[in-house]
Length: 180
Image 1 (cartoon, rainbow, N blue to C red):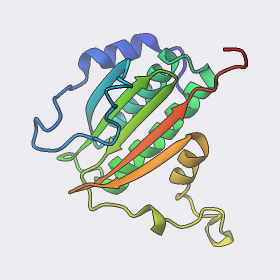
Image 2: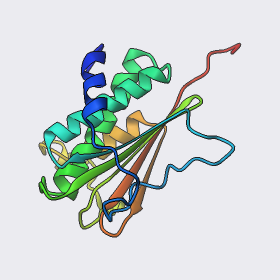
Image 3: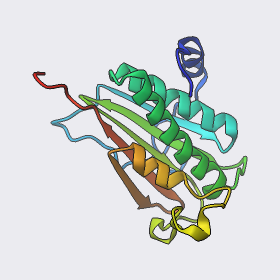
Image 4: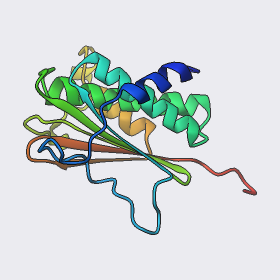
């Protein structure tokens, strides 16, 4: 995973395309809207290309956000890995690496929590139809473990059908130490 790469993160922050939701006619991920009682301390909205470079941008953004949310390096790397898996699924399976389609993401830091929503512009996904990666028939398949890995890392994972596309929301809560 990416560690101690603050210069690169600052560079992508200054270069990233930032748009208001719906500015390009495509709704941004919405399922992580905060309630007025729990406003985000930080919110980053990114549109990235359906490419490995776009995936890397989201992975780096997630890790940097997790570190700013006081997750330790191992937890931040795990959050980045889950984000990478979700972004790969959006770019590859959702958008088919189509250069005309974007992967949209909203990353939020809320007190003790990181929430990341990633949306594609594809045909949509029913997560219930995904094959079980632990089924012996699937053990030697070269792919098919991304959602399984995301669910193992994150505290909450939610899917939502868009028109077009699918949105996945990843939520990780920081464990509070005893006495805090």
